Image (tube, rainbow, N blue to C red; front, top):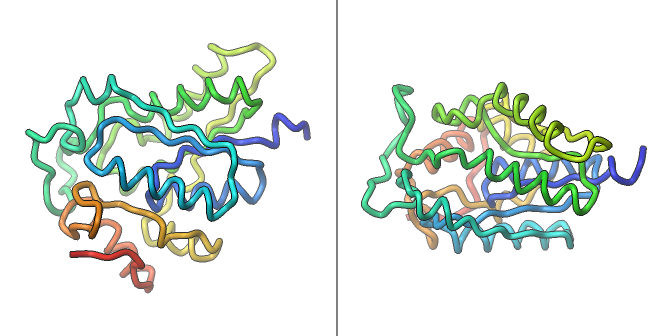
Amino acid sequence: MSNRNCKAIVALSGGIDSCVTLSIAREKYDVAILHVQYGQRTAEKELECFHKIGDHYGIKDRLVAPLPHLESIKGSSLIDNNMEIEKGIPNGSGIPSTYVPFRNATILSIAVAWGEVIGAENIFIGAVQEDSSGYPDCRESFFESFEKTANLGTHDDNRYIIHTPIIHLSKAEIIKEGIRLKAPLHHTWSCYKDTSKACGECESCMIRLRGFEQAGYKDPIPYR
């Protein structure tokens, strides 16, 4: 296997899913990590988690990419303070207000562009279909389509592969996998609203808490 094929870029938000995805990628690849800032309410905390996870694994190749256009477009309660973040887990009817329009496509585009520069054809993203609350850019078919697009729009000698290793796992299964891999889950953050102590009420907090309960482990982060 060539050096190019041994390198991977992992999109790392600082949450459980991306942290476990990074732990999985590290088993086979030399990894670089990518983080995006788009004006989300917990941006500072997520960036802190990104660097703590990177430090934990001793990862040197890091890219923090600002996405001011998403902040300007708004359209999501994660960005727009005039929109309310819903409490609880959605009932499956419609796309929740926390959906950031076409965010995963933007993240993958940056990863592929960076991959062309550093010689990484493997792109990992911690998308989860079951717990994605109906986000359209978390569907497996979307990632399959994007992989084809990436290979049509880059150098002919490249062969990009979009990896979604946890896409069919439940949150409890992801947590168990993270514990098996000794992932630094204590350095992750999931809350959509708060940065010192997690709110415990938003959709992301409740899915996380339910996952730890079902997995049979105590969540290591503080809640108010």
